[in-house]
Image (cartoon, rainbow, N blue to C red; front, side):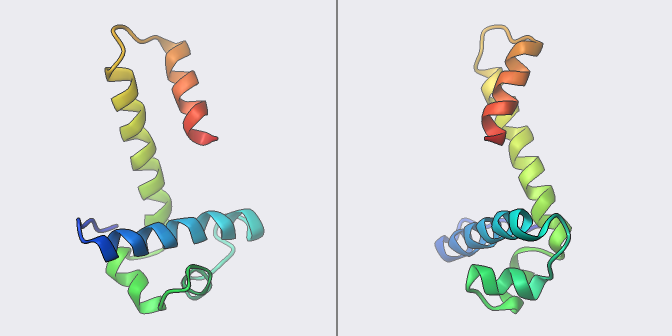
Length: 95
């Protein structure tokens, strides 16, 4: 499970891990890198990773949860939303 905190350093470290995760996924493919490689890419200690996540799948799950939450927020802000709105919001977030 991924962890959450309002601590600025925690948020900064998590942001660096997530950026590194995206970079490594683009470079090496999904699940083709280790936690140690991720930590090196993020320029953080590998032990710091475990203060934020239990495993690499948690990073991916956090992306999914964040995306679903943002889709829900954007659709809730519309007076009426349809399937076209869902696809539009989803595709914007993916880019």
